[in-house]
Length: 72
Image (cartoon, rainbow, N blue to C red; front, side):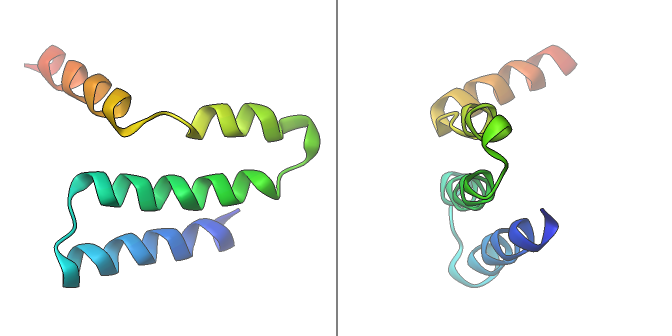
């Protein structure tokens, strides 16, 4: 699991440091890595894994903002 996730995180870090990517680009890079990981999961958990990582950036950002507002 970590062998697959590590390259996605490394890619996201590289993009942030050297290219100045937006939060959306980072989110999408990490989600792509997570989806790739799901493809190599056992068939019994693959569908649930894909549902978990298929949240759109807009939905993610909305949830994130709600959490931040609740913390204030």
